[in-house]
Length: 161
Image: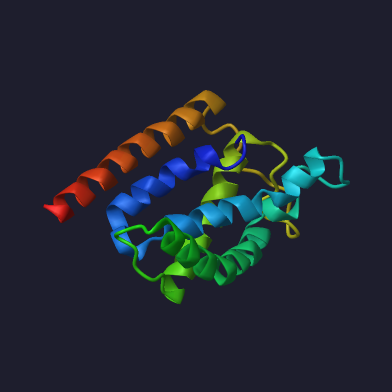
């Protein structure tokens, strides 16, 4: 997946369905954090493109970091933007959202990239690679973003009436 943007599509469906019990800011932050390792490899640092960070174990560690840092950063960002529907992000929501974010990220990437090792360090099986084509995967992410975004906007419009 070409970094974070397409991973955000499914998060908008989650936001539309779960409302204030899901944090798009923490989800987005988890997408950024989990792609730091691939970015560093692309910039010339040694390592595997989809290494430890793109395993279930790595995703769990990154989710913890994303929740701990994403809650205060997300709240600060929403206050700065003066988002009128801003509500504080609870620690529970931060952790649940961060885990959804990192685990969905590695699952989506495992469909697209053969080098994703979901079971590292316990195995090397990538049983999801090629389940759907890359084109279909991109379409799913884009369509889910459009539908989720539309549903979220509709709910917000109704809430303000």
